[in-house]
Image (cartoon, rainbow, N blue to C red):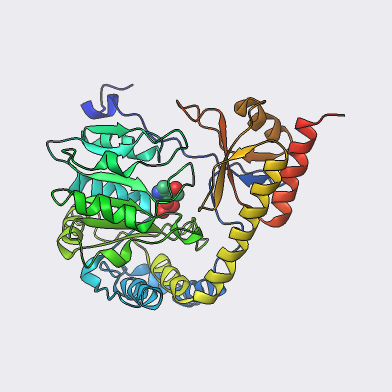
Length: 365
Ligand SMILES: *Cc1c(COP(=O)(O)O)cnc(C)c1O
């Protein structure tokens, strides 16, 4: 507490990120990072950009990020053959968290509360606190599924949810997303697709038909670049212009030279990306089966993590016991989900070590 704080600071409840301990022998399954390295082409592009002398760092980067926007548009033209995107439909930012922060400020400050699921990414209420935005939590059902009907016919100042949802990993079919978007023409519907590449269907193909849809993505998870901090949003040019206006009121150069170059090259390297995500999906399926054999109930996941509950064991205790064996997973002390562990998908070796540790914890000799 300080007399020097602005009034709003006293009431803030900041997000608490999963820890990043600096221990060598640690199996880190707590923040949904990718266990594999980023594309070698991304690394080469970063090195080439830096050059021998690093002189480029004396210059400001491209404030528009055009090369990166082109790479995003090209990638989606390749996978969604019917969809053409222009740079005016794309906003790039220094992580998707920052893109989210910008859009809460630019698009969600209205009279009516925004709607979000009660079990969801815990950063959303934090942005609401920062910008003075009222929100209404819509309960997910008893299987943690988002009920689409609950987002129809309700006055609101905007809607946001991740697809797949976090921290459950459950995905909504694209037809359900479209139902929410078309039922709310008066407000912006934001789909946070941080994990979409691990098995859900992107809504980017709908942006040319719905001017109230904004899709947010990150390169942190499926492209193994959490440390580079790159995120983006795709939507109608009017929405993007709103984001650009806010961005240009706090920082014109969101992305540095290295991030711009590395991110564009990572998006171009489709082959690396495909291999990497298929490996993670395969590990997720086998880990889910093995946890099932140990008595865990696992929510069907389309993400690079799973959300698991053991009916006979306290989740916080299990997390602590795993930690003693140098494995860290995430436990949220929150209503409805405090009986669950969120476990990021590691390499096959890391998954095997987790199963081995749980075996010892659950079946002591
Ligand atoms: C990880 C995550 C983000 C943030 O990604 P960054 O680009 O690394 O900031 C956003 N939304 C959800 C749901 C996430 O899980």
